[in-house]
Amino acid sequence: RYVVIPVACDYLAYRGLVLLTDTIRNIQENLNEDLEMIGIVATFNNNTIHARENLDQVRNNYNVIGVVSTTVKAKDAIYQGKPIVETDPNSKVAEEYKNVTKEVLSYVK
Image 1 (cartoon, helix red, strand yellow):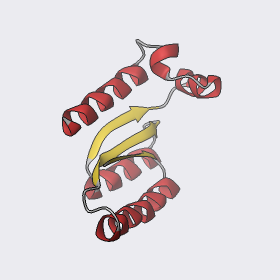
Image 2 (cartoon, rainbow, N blue to C red):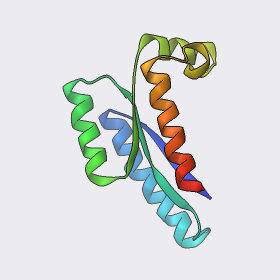
Image 3 (cartoon, rainbow, N blue to C red):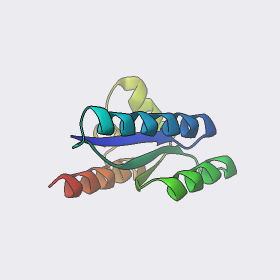
Image 4 (cartoon, one colour):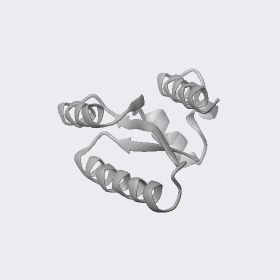
């Protein structure tokens, strides 16, 4: 029923996002008109010029419901196969994901 798309703050991910949203539109038109795209979660934001430029591009073209930073602890959690809210629940990244979760839940209620 709902789609939330995580996209890394880099050029190739943005190109993939464009293709994916085209696919979602095709699904809406041909298979499931009730499918709703809630928005985009920009991930792996390392605040470089490149990341900021790509984030601006995403914000200009899509509904961004959250931006999540990248840290070594976040990557460690990925390698451990655990969510950052479990491995480092008080970190900035965990808080960012909690905020995204609240945004999604507010949309679907």
